[in-house]
Image 1: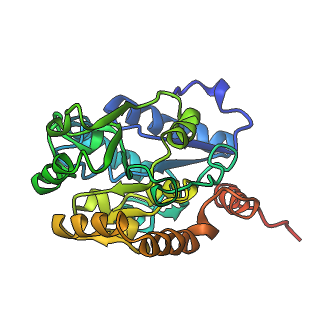
Image 2: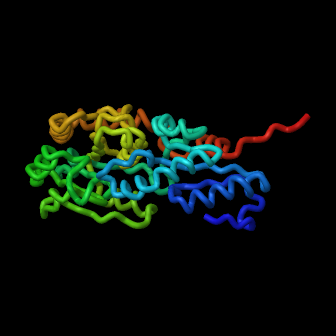
Image 3: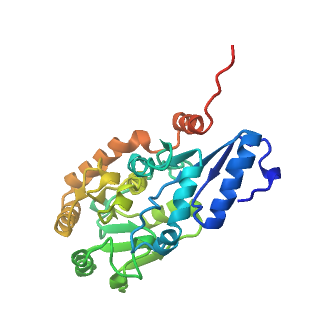
Length: 300
């Protein structure tokens, strides 16, 4: 980001993401005061995390905590905050105007996958967790409690437990399958299809930060043609297999891996619930563009 005028001539909109420092506040303040009025553009802050309240276990906690004063001033300086969820917008509305643009998937790389489950193939059930290291603190369990990690280890011969991206230190075990996170996002969907999981899991601690997250995991698992087990938290409020504790998690995994009718019911119910909000289709792209570039009324 620069405050050099040459970069802003002819600009309609300046979208910023994840700027947080005092220096970045200085630049955005100059742009807002001097350049935006001169060239007639608006500034939006595009955001999908509650960066004003980062949990201690999140690896970005220290960085954002140290920069809270400048973050809040930046949010107040821009013209609008574009949020990925209504819950996030609710928390950030005290700083500025907000607009909700939900996360969706890019269809060319997230095509629907015709998955054949272990019920059909006769193989061992494959259960996947796909998530980054921000869900854990120093490789210890956080979104996974002790009871769940113990259950995973105890059932590692019955099920293929697959961790894509990161895993708790307690699950660094030869019987637990691990795949490193891929640096290129466009490779990620194909990596998941090659793994060919049967069940997805998305567990989150109950806190404001996680309540503000989007339902991306539910969207991803839907395109893989598999059911998911989700924490009973705002992002997954419309999924049909939610759990509030480790006992419920274990119960749902056991039922999904033993009852084919239940497996198919959960998979189909979740897909039907979110299918209309799955992809960046023409209608939603138009909504997205209209949200950023409001049409000016013609003078009579």
